[in-house]
Length: 303
Image 1 (cartoon, rainbow, N blue to C red):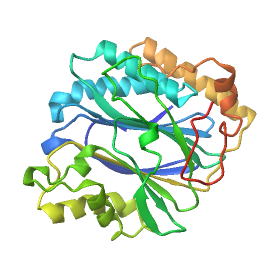
Image 2: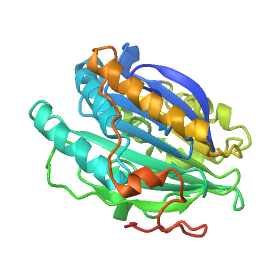
Image 3: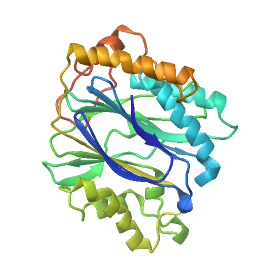
Image 4: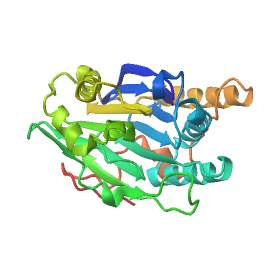
């Protein structure tokens, strides 16, 4: 179910079962809405969390309609078990329903609470940045190139990949839209990945709740202004809150899904997040993630 999502200005932290998240969003030129989308959800059992950030072509209010549409598609398909199927379904629907020439880069992430593993799928989107606490340094996620496909909205037949890594205690993953990397472009001095890393290395990793605000302030101090684009940052770090499966939680899960379906049918909510009815999906909340791996920066495509 959706925990938090939108395409407007935001700066907040969210504690989910097994995962802490911090979100910063700023539409272009301070508009009330923009073309960047953020979406966080957690299954009713608390064992699987799914996140998305996306960047629709265009800026600010001119891109807000497409951003609204993309958020609705994420909500509709979020309960598909296989993340690659989520990406494929969103892409096909976006191709068919969006205006000609509209596309969106995106990154999908699925976090498995029992194992602290995270699956990543990129649709033409900037690679996430990974902080390893035992190394005390940030770096670009090394599997980004093999996890990337075309942006949503270009070709409905794209087959998306996924890669997996395990996050250790105090490890972090930073997802961003290109508004961060392209900061300073109007001065012919783009920040780029190396510039982002140089700012991150000066920030305190033991204060993740302050990191995104400090990152944005570091950009402002370097260029004298905020990025001339929509900007979204999402920081993820595992926590020790592991859910327990009980009969009461199982009954509650069914009730929450039924309630969302009724709300959608009555026009009181967005598209209902209907579950994908497969054996793997039904069992998925009660088992560890498929193809579990030891801690590694190199993952697997999964089954």
